[in-house]
Each structure stands twice: as C-alpha cells, then as structure tokens.
Image (cartoon, rainbow, N blue to C red; front, side, top):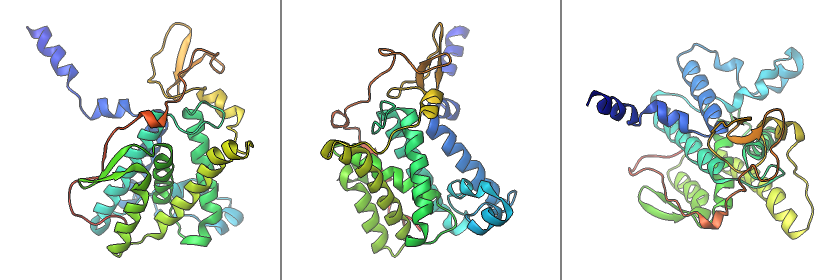
Length: 282
C-alpha cells in the first residue's frame, strides 16, 4: 500500500516534470530569458549593460550585447501582465514549433534547423532594427518572429484568442489588430513578422517555386544537434540524445535513425491564447 502511494505521488505532474518535458531549444531559451528578466528587474544585473549598443561593441568590445538584447523580455509592475503574455507567447509557439518539426533547411526540420532559424532571425532583427523601432531590447520581437513562422508552418491548426477561434494562419494579424485597436506598441509585432516572412520566403517558398536553396543549416550545427524531427530524449545502447534529436555518439545519425518532420497539415492541435479581457503587448 505504501509502495502504491509512493508511486502515485511520483506520477503527479508538477513544475519539474513540465520543465523536463520542454524541448531542448525552448527550454534553454526560456530559462535564459527568465533568469535575465528577473535579475534585471531585481537590479541584480544592470539592464544598461545588456541592451543593444553598436558603439559599445565596436569601441569597448562588449560582444555579449549581440545576444543579451534577446534575453530581456519586459519589466514588472505596470508592465507585468504584458511581460507574462510575451513569456507565454515565447513558450507556447517555440515549443509547438520545435515539437512539431519545423521547416527543413538541411536538418530534417529538427533542433538543428530551429537553432539556425533563431540565429537567422537574431541577425536579421539586428540588421533591420533601425528600419522599424530602433529598440535596445528585442526578445519580444524574436518571440513574434517565431509565432509568425509557426503560423506559416501550421496554417490549418486551430488557435483562439480568449475563446474566439482564429485559424493559425491569421493569428499573427489578429494579435496585431488587437494591439493596434488597444493603442499598444505594435511595431515590435510588425518587425518580428517582417523578419519571419523573410525566413519563410527564403526557406520554403524559394526552394519550391524557384528550385533554389539559399538557407542551409551549417554542418557544425548539424554535428552538434543531429538530424531529424523532434523526438524526446531516450538514450539507448551506443546512442545518446542531444538537442532532443537522437544521434550516434560523435556524429550525425545514420539514415533510418531519425524521425522525419511531421506534415503540418496533419496537425490540428488547438492553441488557447488566454480567456480574459486584458491588454496585449506593449
């Protein structure tokens, strides 16, 4: 009887099991954002040392500023609810995209391709930053970038905003329209969507329509994370799980050892975007 009770307690899902279940990239990105955001709000880390500053990079060689602008997602206090919404968007659509198998740029739509997609988005957001908002922090923009690409990869999925059903392909624009009507800052959305559309066009449309490939996941990323669609880590004899893609020790998985990316049209998982009547975005 005691054994049964003990087993039942161990089977209860909690924060630890939820965190463990997150796919590799989403887990590490969300963790880094949470740590940075909380530390800056508690003034443990100076936010001004983390924001984007090309002058500081060029003159003082503060190269960490290339990455840290994508790790602070918002303040607490009056901005607290908007910060929570942005964190939810990051978690929800990053994990959905990573688990479902994304656009294939050489890694079978798996973790390696997702890492390359994020790197592409970060670089293009920095390059185009001055054309949109000229902001100093861009974590929200990167989250909206992922949201847009998820919607293009899963156009037939069911989504909703506070109980109102919205086809996934229209979800980014519904969120944008809502924030525009509420008078919130919508340029971060437009910036993320624009860069997301650029990635979608180059990664998916160009190869299909023009027969040319311009985006290919580099070999060093493939060697690190493996090839194939998302599979939960499940080590076997002679195998290990890196980046949630099964691969051989010391190299890329051999054919037949990976799961191909899923057909996005076959997924119709519903996605809830809350059930209240609060303000979205900044």
